Amino acid sequence: MKLGFGLYRHQLTTENFRFARQCGAEWLVVHLVDYFRGRGSIDNQPVGDDAWGWAGDPHDPIWSEESLAQLQEQAE
Image (cartoon, rainbow, N blue to C red; front, side):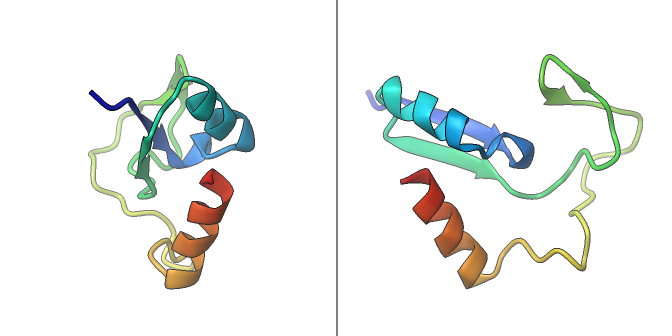
C-alpha cells in the first residue's frame, strides 16, 4: 500500500507538503482547477451554490509546463 494525499489548489502550501512527507506519503493528487471559485468553505473544503465545472480564471493558466514544473519543485 502507498499513502497519498489529495490537495485542492488553496491547500498547496509548504506546510501541507511537509505534513504529507512526515506521514510517509509517496503521492500527491493535486486539484488545480478551481471548481469552487467564489464559494465559502466548511472544514477547509470548498462548497457553494454554483454548479461544478468552473475551470478558474482564463488569465491564470494552470496547465503550463512552467507552472507544473514549479509545483513539482515546491512539493519535493
